[in-house]
Image (cartoon, rainbow over all chains, first blue to last red; front, side, top):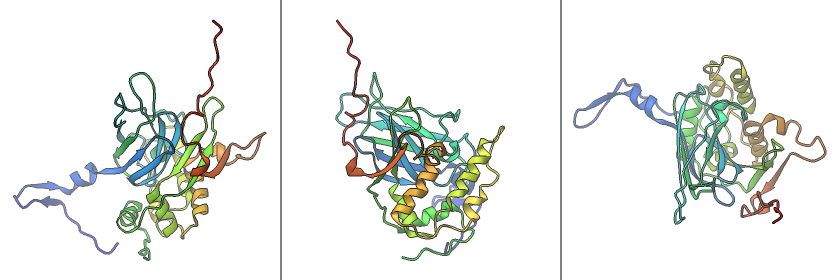
Length: 133
Length: 150
């Protein structure tokens, strides 16, 4: 990289300051927004390598820079615009029973659906928080 | 645009540079594979920002790094990666063709049990195809039902 800033705190114009560790630890480490209908298409992302369409309303997201442990936090949500129901999420495979190449990089499993069954969603977002490997 | 000299640069920082400087590349390739006889086929879709990194070169670590981390994670009592430096300090991959990138991605994100033996047995477990070759709806999935006699 062209330059490096080393600082322990960040201060706003109003004089409020926080430790840079809040920023480092609190920032999302990976995110993805994709269309889960038809042929899945990623709209935008960061630190993701792929989305796998596992079945109707079921997906797996994979990260490029693995997380440090399997205990990171992830949140997901989904919506089906104009549909008669709101789609929702999710399922995580903390046990690793469907482990691809390790839960730290490749195994956040999402499910989306309506009130009674899993269904594809038009707009699905997933965000990882935690420490990077 | 040339990739900066990323020697020992944290992978996260390399991805930040790529996000700011590279145009995402939507690949037409899809990987269809079966990893369980009880489940329908899976379709792996490459991430467009990741594909841009692969085509650019000098950003992504070699795929064997992920396999090493996966080995660590498979150890009993695994708590946290202690060899994450492999991601950051290993010499990044040179620019790949799109086909080479798909092969890399298969070895990264598909189960090893699929890609290591994809062409063994009585039918292939995995194929690489284009997006246009996939059905556009889900009607082909779970599409049969057992008719129950009245």
